[in-house]
Structure formats: structure tokens, C-alpha cells
Length: 301
Image (cartoon, rainbow, N blue to C red; front, side):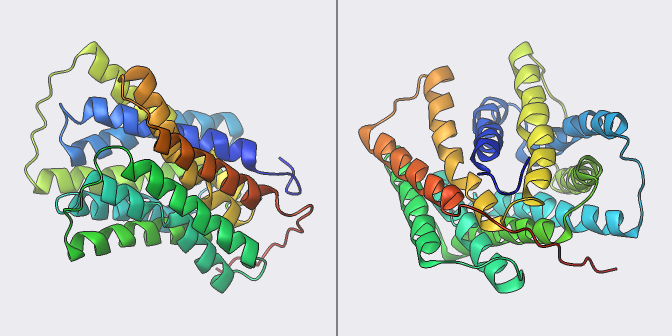
């Protein structure tokens, strides 16, 4: 993985894994309460990542590793998940999707403000805005774009986007040397908090498992969570945060494509137009520089 090459192939893979979560969540959420499902999702991913740790011989846990586990596990794990769970009670899923699509924009702004080796050109800003408008077009044309939300719901979803953006910038600064180990710790934190929250809210843990439910939950934990958690940390340590953050723009494309393929959901012409705008914007973001020097800011202790 050379830093002077476009990260686009890795972003496509990450966005496919993240985007597939919508399909598996839609299948699973009818039978499993949301917080318990979040705990199961992380819990299934943990042993898979532990196998990866053993394979890669990533065992050493020191103070910096524990710090990264806690910070990334909070910013990319339990905090945005809890905020989203609260927000979705007072806004529509379409509104939530649009607001979460601000993540790459927030990531770019935070990276430019906090990281010495990142800056935002006018072209990058225009591409970020274009990608966001493409997401808005995709979601608004899905037939579920009614405006029903409250101010607190909107603020909570902005908090979700800010948390993910801050997590990406932190990971870019920290450049974890043991991504599988960090991802394992991140998911341990996320699973523990989600399970505790599920218990406090009185969710039922009595589940009626079917083959389809078992498959969707397993895929949610393995394909949509474990693999992208590691790949994201590897990629963010080698490429600029604003470029890696563009993967979030691609998620709705995979979501509608998989929904059409497996759930017989219709794809409208406006969704196709929005998807083309997103792809064009991401291409410009990830390929606008012919070369890119890597700097390695010192990690704090």
C-alpha cells in the first residue's frame, strides 16, 4: 500500500463493507433490539480480530495502545452509536443519513485545523460539497425523505458525524502500529458499553434465532464490522484524512445497490444521478494530487 498512489480501491472496499451493514441491519433489526444488536455486532467481530492479531503477531499492549483503544473505541464506537440511537427516535432515517453524510466535510475541516500535513484546497472543498449534495440527492429521492425531525435530533446526528470525523483525525495522527489489536480493543469498548446500555434500558435478550437471522448478524459482525475496522486503521495511517473520509460518501450507493439486489427495492433516476455525482466527487478528491509526501507527527506519551 503505497502512500503516493490513490486510496480509491481501499475506499471502495471499506465503503462496500460499511454500506452492506444497512442490508444486514434491516434484516436483523426486526428481531433484535437496537442496543443488543450493536453489542452482538461488535461481539462477533472481536474473536475474528483476535485471530488476525495472533496471525500478525500483534500482542504487545502498552500505554499508547490502551490509549488508542479507548479513544478510537469512544469516537468511532459507543459514542456515535448511542447518539444515533437517541437521534433516530426524533428524526427520520433519511434525515439521519443526510446529516451523517457531513462526516467527510467535518473530517476535512478538523484535519486541516489540527494536522500539520493536511490542508484543504478550493478544489477539495468543492468536491466535498459535491459529494454531500450527491448523498442528499440519493437519500431525498428514496421516497422516505419526509421532514419530521426535532432540533435535538438534528444536533445529535451532527454529533455523530463530528465523533466519526474526530475519530478519523485522531487515528490519522496516532498512526497505530498494531491496527488489528487497536480494532479489537475498540470493539471491546463498543460491545461493553452497548451491552450495558441494553441492560439499563430493559431490552429483551430472549431471541428467536432463525437461519436468516443468524446469517445476517454474523455477516454484520464479520464483513461489515471486523474487516473494515482493521482496513480503515491501516489506510488512515497512510493517506490523508480528507481522502479516507470520502469513503462515507460511497456508503449510500452500496446501500441502495444491495437493497435493490436482495430486497427488491427500486432505484430511481435521481438516485442514479446522485450516485454519479458522488463517484465523480470522490474520484476528484482521491486523485487530485500526483504525489503526496508523508509526514509522521510525533505521538504523545
